[in-house]
Length: 134
Ligand SMILES: [Zn+2]
Ligand SMILES: [Zn+2]
Ligand SMILES: [Zn+2]
Image (tube, rainbow, N blue to C red; front, side, top):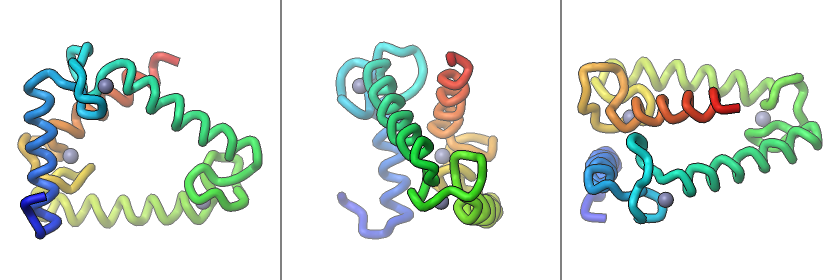
């Protein structure tokens, strides 16, 4: 990595990912991306989704938090402390990033007029895409 500064490194990564996307390659496997939007090909997305689902399911079955793996004291997928911590951290981060003019989602270099960078906006679209499929 050519940069030592983590901020710069993030910008570099964002740009590098954008470049890969421009070339029409999947960011995960480097093969041709067969989707019209998004940074990963269908096969990689499916793999990732299966892996995530499996881990979540097994923890849920054991009555454990999907995030920390401790005993889950709620009827949701994550325990109370994780839910609270996550919400608090997200709020702080969002505020901090808005002030700095960074992407509110990844904190990286923002190349759009919106609150999120183009990559996160796309990921959001992807997320919605997968969750409406089920
Ligand atoms: Zn791929
Ligand atoms: Zn937890
Ligand atoms: Zn972003």
